[in-house]
Length: 260
Image (cartoon, rainbow, N blue to C red; front, side):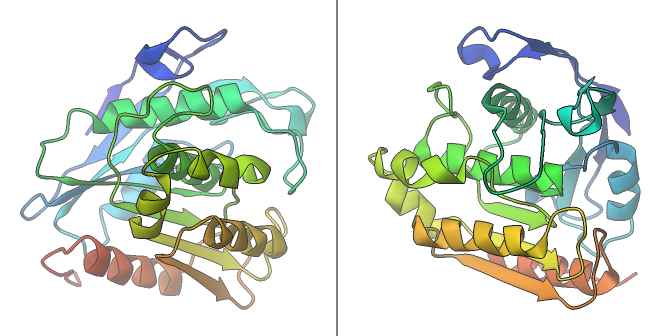
């Protein structure tokens, strides 16, 4: 099942942004069992939601509803300004790269909007691959601090974050954002995060993924697991997805996953 999403200002409905972002088609994988959790999954640079929704159709997680949106098509500085589907603009993938806060906030707000209509008893999570993982981690920081980077209120209560082959944007401002929130330290300590990274990744360096996990831990994210995979490049493998399934089942209190 799929549907078209609408364009929105960065920061969502909490304030006008300078740019409008036209998000692409969103694909939804309905739970095959009792609906206990909903996870928005964010694809990597140049990809779309369809490719990941096809994978989630096969996973043994019958109690999860998966929402797989498609990023806006925008000029990407990393590729000389050529248009790609991207959650935010990026010039280089490194610890010291300039962060597109407006783009990050717009995508985080889009994800929050997708989760906002879920039933109140359903646990909510965000996951992603590569640039999608970076956006998921940005959303985690927004949840913990209670605000987007632009200061607008973040409205969603998250229960799980999964990052595959990703990195943490805005890491230099992380500690100040959390310590500046009354409940930030408590939320950081309780939010479960599962980060995975291949040691052979030649797109998002393993060292960047490892440093991102360290920065999150140092800022108070106590419920964090970082998994490394020898020889794994910038892609996912069954060993990794099996671990994600087990981790989600345990941390979301699901009834258990089944093998097809």
